View 1 (spheres, one colour):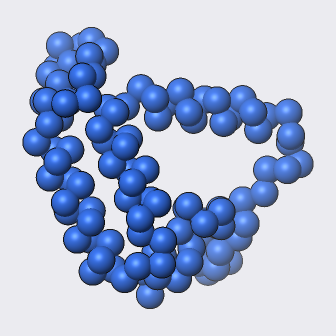
View 2: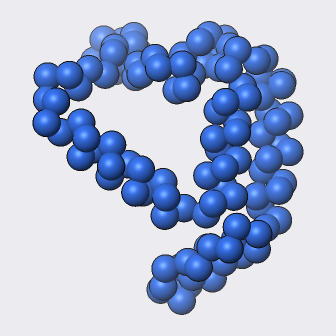
View 3: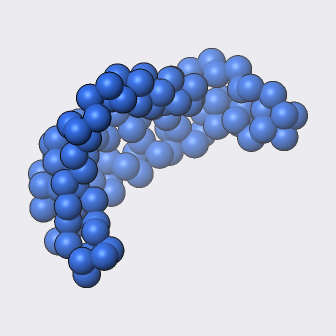
Length: 110
């Protein structure tokens, strides 16, 4: 069973990760013991996401929202449609170009 079909999807609030020390079982990632670091980590993560191409971020967000509880086939069909629109965009060309030129990308959202 896939993680999407089993309900272990990142969007459902179940933040489990494999525990390789225990033979692959899942453990809950609990950060409540260090509340002072939660806001800083959240801001850092949001800043990293915001630096990505806007079309890719929007497509990822759409995929996460639309695929909770769907079959693998439905997930991959939606992913493929979103992937095509992102990979054929101007931003998809800008990312590698900016990397090659050692500069920050100038995302246009097109």
